[in-house]
Image (cartoon, rainbow, N blue to C red; front, side, top):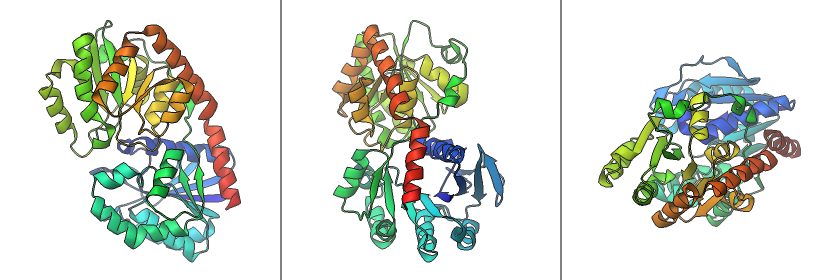
Length: 388
């Protein structure tokens, strides 16, 4: 079986967060399952461009990846990608589109219909309530009316990572021929790396007696830092040893707003910005922290939550994070409303109760191993592709 995965940005464009990681891991495990996967993508990387070979095959973990140069950023359009679709899409058995509001979904849907090929769209949370209302709401609704609704209506299936994403999609009144919920999988191979004990704390000059509250995600409005900062101010009043580590790249200049909040609550000596961490550095941050917090407005899944749980960290997330039901059911952390008081109380509860934190960490690791295996996730997609 030959699958074309059409996605606007791809590894190593990690600034775009969890989907970049989870999409490649899916493709990698599909290849291991015996599926021939080709990825058509662009060289976009935020305001920059990836330093990758263009218009040619690049093999990454067995996946054939083709990076095409972008020429129109607002729609993330690439003429050479457009031309490749027109020429080659007919040779694939099915098309998987991970994109909405951008050229990939419209062009992919057009040529799939032209060559009578089944296609799947993965919105990856972009059609959930909060993202639709918060940013460029009017433009998005106009785009949906003019283009995206047609793409969605003709799709043979819409893929959601959690039930909550599917529910919000239906409440938005968007067309659905077939909806399927398949979670992201977590590739455990990269977590086998051994990091030197204390490497993270040593690098960022964090005393061994400090209690580290870890936020690891893009610095973006929807990640809930406007709740976390004031909540952490309340934590510090009762637990002076607490330190907040903010790990992630600045998305669209949002860091300035976060720094303003930190200054306003007089927390400059209690907060550390590390920027984006990858590989061993990221693993060290997880392993040397005491609790992971992600108080998002909306999160269709939450890959960083999976990583934290697998590495034994108790997690605190809002009900708006897609895998919140799994976290609650598995006893892997505390699920709260997006409320400063609830977040601060949850942090203090874990910091002041080491036995509870340890138990939650153990439950989280077991949950990931049981429910989010990349092998089982890939198998579900194989079943979907075969059905289509």
